[in-house]
Structures are given as structure tokens and as C-alpha cells.
Amino acid sequence: MGQSLSNFSQFFPPKPTFTEADIPDLKDKVYLVTGANTGVGKDVARILYSKNAKVWIAARSEEKTNKAIDDIKKSSPGSTGSLSFHHLDLADLNSVKKSAEKFIASESKLHVLFSNAGVQSPDADGKTAQGHEIHVGVNCLGTFLFTKLLTPLLANTAKTAGPGTVRVVWVSSFVDLVADKRTGLPLDKMDFLKIGSPLDRYAYSKVGNYLHAVEYARRHKEDGIICVPLNPGNLASDLYRDQAGIFKFFVSLIVHPVINGAYTELFAGLTPKISLQNTGAWVIPFARLSTIRKDLEDVLKTEEQGGTDAAKKWWTWTEEQVKPYE
Image 1 (cartoon, one colour):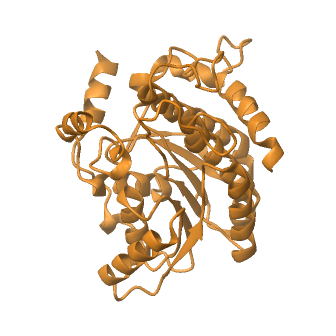
Image 2 (cartoon, rainbow, N blue to C red):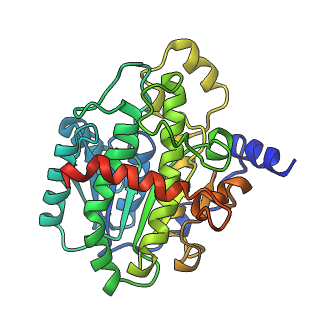
């Protein structure tokens, strides 16, 4: 009953209790938001900018991003922050490496990486530049590599930044609802190529995001980096833009305003309720701390401890895929 209520609460959450009013001045802070030229990410960038932060929008289209930047600047004419485009194509691991290297050359610090970008494609044969299934390739491998390459910069920032201010926010989804029992993912089919429909693969990619986040939290706690996985909720965003009309119609019946998803991401990235002591905490709509489905606690336990060690196994497989592009 408890888990059913939790799932219902994530589909129909209460109003957010964390908004712009809860965010302090962010002068001298640096934030990187992937996929922020539209939807939830754009609102995240807008609010950060309104609080005088230095914000980088990482996306593929410079034209679309520059339009978003103009819109955001008009909404906060008094901001002393900055907004900049940063090219990132998560569907090409060679491009991801170049993007990370360019960012490191441009910036001496990074306080929060908001890994907001993602793809939900109806194309059953969609693949990345390296031939990976499109959902695992973009949502998992590209995001993982970009995060890994930026980790030294995050760790260096954490040495002098205030405690708990350096974070990686990993946008997942309804993990409690779609994850396999105890492992989260089918560990014998990590490439996703022969798993169900494109929608099934998208769902598994979001579970993959969760596993990456909790394993990252475990590995980088000593570096002073907090990592937070989250479910932003069902939102009226551009994520479903490539889906069929009937699918979009049914989705429209249960979606919520995009801004609520932005509040959830910002809560994960900024709230003092999350510290190094509870890094890896699960955040649900809208801007609430929660606990993950009980059996999924096994993903971080070794087999000797009675767990499945699934997060480590997924991490190791992912590292093998991206290693040639580091």
C-alpha cells in the first residue's frame, strides 16, 4: 500500500514548497544545464539567471539556444548574471569529449551540473553516432561521459566552495514504477537493443540514470560532490514532441506545468536539506525528498551483503563503452 501511495503521489503531487523565493542570491556561482534551450531546463536556467548566477546552456542548436537566452534575459532585465551557449551533442561521444574539454578550458569552477537533457524517440532503430541504441546512448552513455570528464572540475571547485554547494543533478523518471525488481535494469541486456518498444527503452534509460547517480554519489562523496537523482514528474514539456498524436493526447491528461519540474531540479541542486551525509537522496515531484522502492536498495549492496551490486555492474559496463572516448 505504501509504495502504491508513493507512485500515486508522484503522478499527482502536491504543490511545490520550494520556489524562486527559497533561492538566495547566486552571484559568483557557476551552473551548467544540459538541454536548457527549451522546457524544464530553460526554466531552470531562467531562475538561476534571475538570481545573478553565471549560467551555461549546453545544447546542440546554437540558434535555438540564443533565442532562449534572449527570452530569459528579457524576463530578468535587472540580473547581474550571465548566460552563454555551450555546444553539446550527447548522441556523439567524440563530440561529448570535445565539449567537456572546451568547457574546462573556459571555466575555472563549476558548482552544479544539471544533467537535464534527454531524448524519447519513437524510432525503433534509432542509434547514436557510435551505433548505440538512441536512449541508452544519449540518456546514459553521453550523459555519463560528460559528467565523468567534468568531475575533476567539480571536485576542484568543492575544495574552496561552501559545504554542500557542489553537486551533480541527474534527471531520472518514475524509477519506482518501471525498474526491474532488485536490479533496476536487465543486467544481461545492458545495450537495450532488443528490449521491447522504444518507450520501454526510454524507461530503462531513466533507471540507468538513477543507478549512475547513486553509484556516483557513493564514489565521489569524499571529493565533496553531492549527487542527486530525481523524478521531475509528468510535465507538459517538449520531451514527447516526437511521439504519435494519440500518445501525446493521453499524456496531456496527466501532465503538470513545466515550472514545477524546474522547481524540483532546483531543489535537488540547491536545497540545504541535502548534504554529503544524505548524498544520493531520491527527490520526487514536486521538490520533495523521498525513499526509493525498498527492493532497489539492493542495487548498492554487494552480493556478499545480500544485494545485487547492480549499480556497480552498470557503472562498469558504461565505463567500458565510453573508455575509447575519454
